[in-house]
Length: 416
Image (cartoon, rainbow, N blue to C red; front, side, top):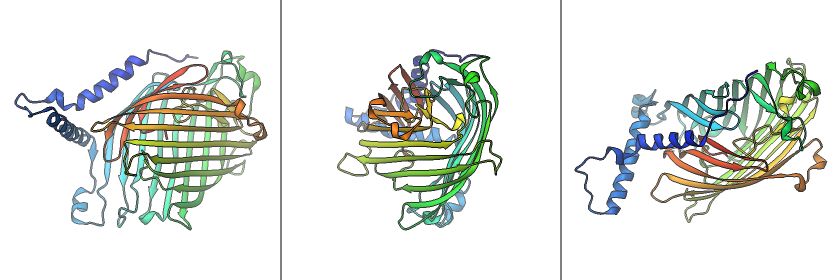
């Protein structure tokens, strides 16, 4: 079985970012007769030209399916279909290259009170010999009376395994491979207040084509689902979302709660229950609450499972979203609690920004055993580059530190 192909990462990320900036940097394309009167004019002109160059560059990858109709009909939203190359990096995937498409639209008659529906799709291939097809969609009907959200994922994902528990040693490390097919649509209806939605859906998570290290820890321990599993069941869902921007909020609350019942009736291989929640809050520290110059973000997540839980449904500690600095799945258990706070700074008259984050989390096999003394810390800093002003979409590079090592992450959009 092939091992992970680890390459030197810092050079790759620096070159990629510099290439992106250079491609769109108007200074490189300045004409000889551009002679502003003073430094202030140079700054303003460069910023204006930079915006213009980014728009031209973005338009190369953007299609407008209903542009002519929307120009004639004010009840139509000018939808966008964006296709672009993708570059990302995380310790779980190494360097990943691929292509992505995103469809941004609103239903006829939706105004400013309705947020833009987002249907993305990405296909990536990584230097760890993984392929990942993913879509995390969010669709709003008129006046946000209904929300349709969910995930679609199909991937071949070699992963590292250290055992199950909160104190598994790094020396246990071994690789196991599997293919995953996940389909999770959820439909929610607005109830009581503007931003509150209640509903439910189905979740189907199929793990197959597993390959284990011969006589390794996983083959010896044989936890539920170690050689493949199917989770099939119904979910109850609750959503509260008052964020002003889905990709990068500067104010508002977000709460997503699901509780799923899984069994054999719909073709599942194990019977268990799974509860997950994700709570976020964003505060703008500037004088204007809509300012993106200084933002404080908070996140608190939980994952709780009961019954005959397959290994791929256990709580996985770490990742590029929360507990950055730990490889995802470094610790596996039935229950997880984690929290983080992040300070985001955008530099004046610039597309550049920086962040600093601090967090902690822990896993346990019994919720009564959660203790702050058993939680593991993480912290780190990052750099941001504003790629799309309209969507406030950033390229992010984060350096996260855990209790064993540090990791670098390169991706689009914020961690939360």
